[in-house]
Picture 1 (cartoon, rainbow, N blue to C red):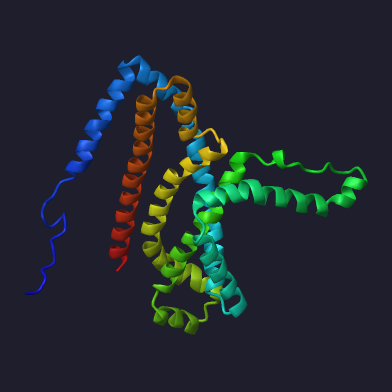
Picture 2 (picture 1 turned 90 degrees about the vertical axis):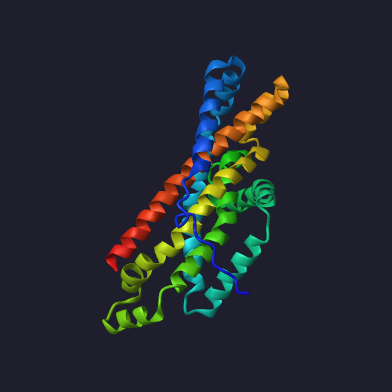
Length: 275
């Protein structure tokens, strides 16, 4: 007996009842926070870390996207050395857990960078023109951002590579026959088509980084998780504190997922309309 393809949710006429249930739960929790003094106090303390969480996520993801795009382009170059260098970077970084990478960048990479910087400017320091740098000049927040950037850039590079390679070679050859140079082929032919393939996994990585940004709390960065740890350790209100933390992260990730899904649908409709 052969397998029958299961109908999709749209074919079955499903409605997003899961979203309605989440909204209802969210409204109930919002009411609890508004009318319960203890939960309101916890939310006020934890909420102070929301800006840090958003800032770390946006900056780290933006830098990771730029770095990942550069690595992907190196991996698709005509140079064997550049291709192998890009592959080496991707394989090594993907094999390191984000938490380990955070510790390594913060406590190994940062001191090494400071030592190299001081060595490079030593002639200027001896002349009294510059002051040597110390490790504490590099904030823990920026060490965490750099670690997230490096960690996610390897995955983003693979997303870009797969997206670029999804464009049919015939279209690229046709563009070459029209006399378009490499940059023009990339800007006019490859990227507009590849972005529809790239965007869904890239948006998934963005949501994942929102969650992984909680790891920066191990360095003492005052994000949502760190503020909750400090409050819970002092008040012993672990249930209330981490319930609020869970609520905050769910609002951030689910809200962001819905927005990105809507953008993906618009891109898909726009692409279908052009065809």
